[in-house]
Image (cartoon, rainbow, N blue to C red; front, side, top):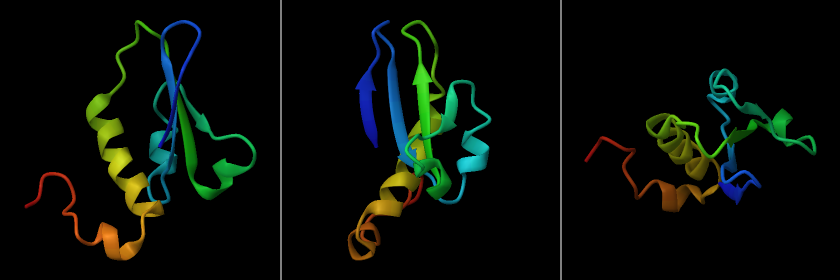
Length: 84
């Protein structure tokens, strides 16, 4: 995930979502990441300072994104969220 602050006190974050990018793009403030990365499943979310981001959904997307870019051997050692 790439995370940055916005001038209004909000934030933007970009994640690689190879399986659920279309679902993620339905969230208000979501758009395909620029520079052609959207074609590879990257989604950028932008939230204003006073907005209420869907933190549970973003956390779930963060897990998918990490698994998409982490070495397979490393990601295999971590159970998905909600599982032990």
